[in-house]
Length: 130
Image 1 (cartoon, rainbow, N blue to C red):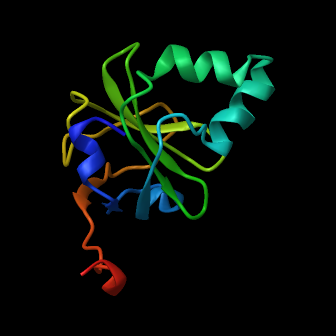
Image 2 (image 1 turned 180 degrees about the vertical axis):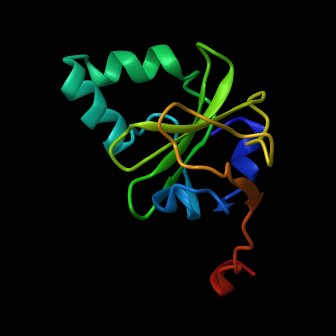
């Protein structure tokens, strides 16, 4: 992982009207494809590897909720996306690859208001590494 976003190991999505997107998300390697992204690609008869390479820069960390929701930066439109577990886009915000936007998220069509806020989550240090 190489972007500044990689320094944040977890983020917290809060207050969004789409309950499945609220919660803690863990940082994931850029070369791993979210399950929901693959689901969407399969439904559209797209190659998930090719689409992931097309939409991401291969360097920027993305974040995954335990329920499969995910947050990633789309280089095609220059925006960060919060997608539901099924891979459907819910929220979108402008931002560069250095960090996930904390505010100014917008609802995509069909999403439930209000838009969320995002903040870095507090991670307990691993005592083996102190």
